[in-house]
Length: 336
Image 1: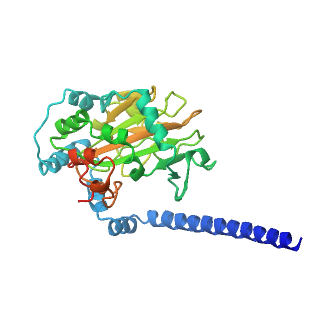
Image 2 (image 1 turned 60 degrees about the vertical axis):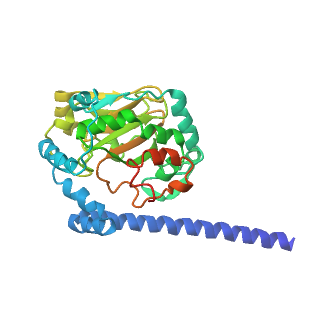
Image 3 (image 1 turned 30 degrees about the horizontal axis):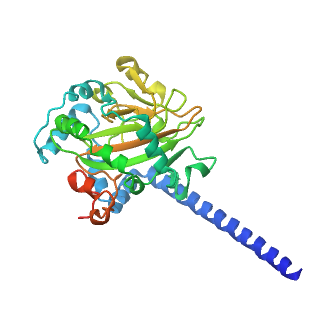
C-alpha cells in the first residue's frame, strides 16, 4: 500500500514537472515572439540582423527595393546575363507572359498526387508560428491554421523529385528568362479551415528574387470551400505600390481585380499550375475542407528561404540517379 502511494506521488510529480516545462517553454516562445515583434518595428536593425544571420538577405533586400515591373524586368535581364545558357523554345512562354500562369502544364493524375500525400503521413510538420513544436498532421493542435513539412523530408519522396526535374517546366523557365534555373525550394503545407486569413492567405506579391517561377500541385481535391489558390490575371505587369511581406485586403486590390480579372484554381488532386509569383496572389482560407499543397520554386539566384547549407550527400542518397542527372538544378542542395 505504501509502495502504491509513493508511486502515485511520483507519477503526480512527473505530471507537475511536465506541465511546468510546457508552461516555461510557452512563456519562452511568447517572449521571443514579443522581442521579434519590437525588432521588426525598427526596420534598419531588423534588416541588419537578418544579413548578419544569413548573407543571402543582402541580395534579397537589395532587389526588393525595386517594385515596379519595368525596373524589375530590366534588372532580371542583367542578372540572367551572368548565367547565359542555350535557349530552348517553349510555346507556353507566351501564355505565362500574358496571364501570369499556365494551368496544368504537366499532367499529374490524382493517383500520383494521393501517393505523395500518403508518403507524407508519417512525416512531422510544424506550425509556422511555433516551428519548434512538431506533430503528425492527425494530431495537430486545435489552434494550428497552417502546418508545414520539412524540405528534407520531401526529398525522400521519389515522385516529388521526378516532378521537380520535369523538362517542360525547365524549358519554360529557360525560354522566359534566357537562363537555366536552380531548384530554390520544395515545400508542402496543410491549410485548415479558419475564420481568419493568415499570412499568405492575404493578397501579396512575392518579391523574393528577380527571375523566379513557382509550381503548385494540389495533393487533395480542392473546391471553393477548400481554400483554392487565387491569382489576379496578368498582374505581374501592374504598377502597384507594395513591398516585402506586405499583405493587402480585398478592397486594396479591388481596382486591380476589376482591370485584370481574378482566377481561382479548383480541381481534383493533381491539378497544377506554374505561376509568375510577382503577380498578386493568395491562398484562400479554407471554409470546410483542409487543403494540402506541394510547391516547387525555380529561381536563378538562391533566396534565404532555401536551405542555408547543402543537406544531401548524393553518394548515399536513395535517389542519387535523379540528382546526378540534374546536378545543375540541385547545385545548392547537394553536398559537393
